Structures are given as C-alpha cells and as structure tokens.
Image (tube, rainbow, N blue to C red; front, side, top):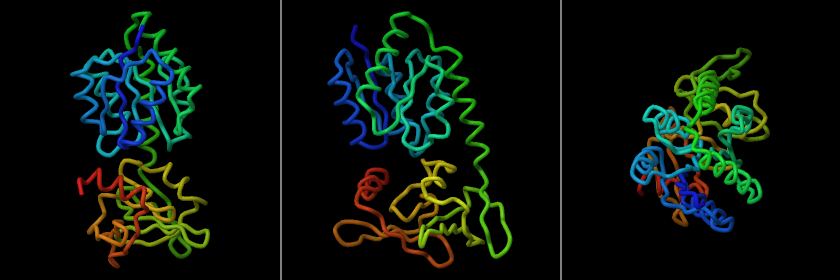
Length: 255
C-alpha cells in the first residue's frame, strides 16, 4: 500500500530533501508540506495523511505542541518526529510505536521508519498512549530548562531563559547577555547551550552567535543581501547573520 504523508519543517530545503528521499524509497505519496505548526494542523485536517514527518524545533508551535493538539483533536495520523537539536531527549522517542529521525536524515534509517509506519497503519491501530507519554516527557524536560546559571563576577546568577537576549562565543568563552546582566556560561559550546533552550525562539544566526528572536530591535541590510541584527540590550549590540540563516530569516519574517 502507498502511505499518504505530510512533511512539516520550517525550512523549505529540509522539506524538499525529505520529500526526495521518500520518493527514492517508494510507496509513499507526499500529499502536502507545511512550514510551521499552524499550517501543519490545517494540513492534517484537510489532507488526512496517514503519517506526518514532524520537525521538532519550529518557530511558533513546536512539533510537540502540534502533536499535543493532534491528540486533543483525535487525529488519526501517525507521527514520525524529525530532530536536529535535542539529542538528549532521544531516549524519550525510543518506544518503537512512534519513531524519530535525526537530521541529516539517513536514507536507510528513513526506510526503517517508513516500514514501521506502514505496519502501524495496516494494523489499523489508533494513535496509542505512547505518543502522549512522549509529549509529556519532553514537555517536562523543556519546563526544567526555563532557567540558566551564568557567572557574574564571583557569583552565579539564575536567569530566566526568556530574558536572555543573546549569547556569543569568543576565545572559548560563552558570554550571555540579559536585560540586567552580562555573564559567562559554563557550557563549552553554543550547541550545548542551545540544547538547553527553545530552538524555536533561540536561533543560531551565526556560528558564534545565538539570539532570542523576540529580543531583536532592528534588522539592518548589509552587503551581499545579508543582515545585521541590532539587539535589545543596553548597547544595541550588532550581530551578523550568516548566509544560510539570512534565508531562514527572510522566509520567517517575509522580508
């Protein structure tokens, strides 16, 4: 049988790549794509896919929030999560009933996930309680990430993640800036720090900079059609945006 699939990811290139890989496997009809959680819920209701390939980290509604709403609406589609960031939560997915894939997606691993979804669909079993368990586990983990410890002088201060304006890496040290404090993080890399934050809000706009997109004051055009971000800290710090993230920013903000 041919599976009806919906591909959900906030990056067009990622959607296209996954669609291509599914086409190579065969036996899967991609009936639609969605670029964010709201579009995903609309598409699920309209297209009635049997399986949804659902990105975890998206602006607005995260993949877990989409899954929760699908549960609440008793949607019958099965979900395969796709994640690039939160490798520490992978054990939450390892329940076999609902699968996960890591980006970049491995074709052989994708084929296993598709076959697992096919067996689930042909057995005519409804979405089981394990999806709800996954969502609950990860939601609890994310709630524990709301505060960060930063070193200011000789003290460690606990700050709310939502108050962080940006974090920058220089000379093997990560500086974290909030509205009231500037300190250093004990995390060794920005990847580690980002894994503790909501990736739909904190964007790695440059290899050395992680920004809270809700704390951007201005977006200033720069050379080669790139941008500089002026942040909402007291110094109006200017942060460059890489070429890849410039495309993402244009798509997200409709620039």
